[in-house]
Image (cartoon, rainbow, N blue to C red; front, side, top):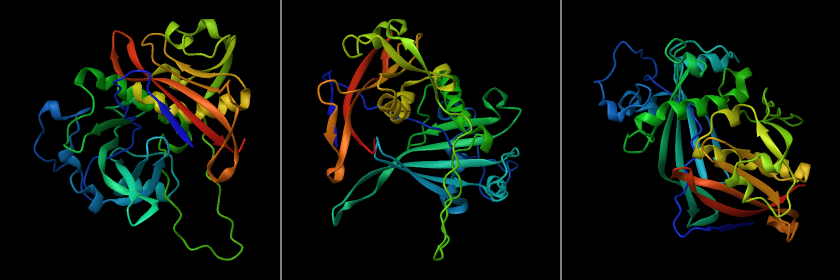
Length: 321
């Protein structure tokens, strides 16, 4: 059960971007590149033209579903990346590339309990080149609109790449690659499906004074908050607007577990995300009639100007706690 409140009359929906991707057609190398794209149509030197028809020629790796945005994501790998995946290797050689399509979803009018794809939202690419992308763990990131335009301005692309890299640090043991081949084999009676491996690096929290947070974050804490659980580590070092949506489920879990507000805040940009148990009604009824915990989240939305960001407030009913 989800209720959404918009304290401001106009608010731009944040399009979170987590970074996976690609760069040459399956079975082909960079020795036969397409015509160079205008610099305005590139990110990290890559353009959509270089990835044409990857969904027809590459290996399907897995699918994911973003619960908070209702977005379906489909990941592909070229031959080099696929070979490393099949060997369960975390050592991806140069030339390994991944691609991910972010798809909007909608209810199937003929079967409304099902969500079906309703058009591409973005294309995300992740290219292995140790020398070119040494600053971001040897992976280059490029993200485009369905029209083939970069989703970020040239002057913002380095910051976004660092944010992507910080997120992928969570799976350093997998070569900084989140997507793993999905299991499609038919299970035999008595078989137990293997559990997904836990990330090598978890998001870390410390208990801090609420007064140490940026003023914008402090103003959105519950009244009389003294202590908070604050994120430290990779997510704190390189944040951008999309990070606020990506970290939200982790903040919700921490707020419920610690019984304190959980916060990610950037002192420089005034970007923040907060989750806390609803002080007015801690209990709620979740889907299926299950007992749940009511959680409020408050976060910055959109780019904003002069650190004056729009604010998005939401209420969730979390079952299973």
